[in-house]
Image (cartoon, rainbow, N blue to C red):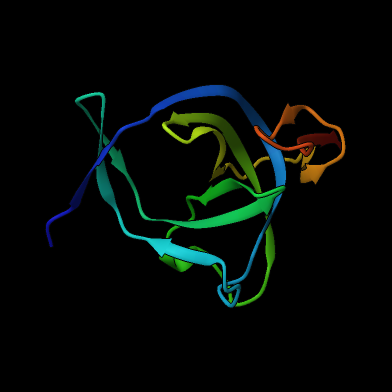
Amino acid sequence: MKKEVITVKASYKTLATIKNVLVKVPGANDKYMKFIREHEMLVDGKSVNIPDHYRRGDLFNGRFLTRHFYIGAEGITEYPQQLIATVDLVEKIDERGSFLILDIHPSGEKPEYKLAIGCPTGDFKIPGTDKWVDFKKI
């Protein structure tokens, strides 16, 4: 099967990479979780390969925070679970404004932080909202 190629009119910037983060993963029965097949993105004329992953959008003050879970089709269970991961915080800027994306990759090490989203204070502000993403020290 040929990979889908998506041309994106946006810029992406990694703001931070946090390792050893305990992350809640919604279950496959979560109506907002969507499996995304491997595809290719063209960003500023450069090809970027995106592996299979799950995507979940969380709405705060009318703005989305997107979480990508790179756990593969077999990596999700029916019910919510926790995993230890490396989290990349990525800022996406397009014609609609600035958005925050969390790319979550399992890392399998001892957790040092716990991810919390939609907090009243924290480490990274969710653009266009009064909410924050926080990495709480365990």
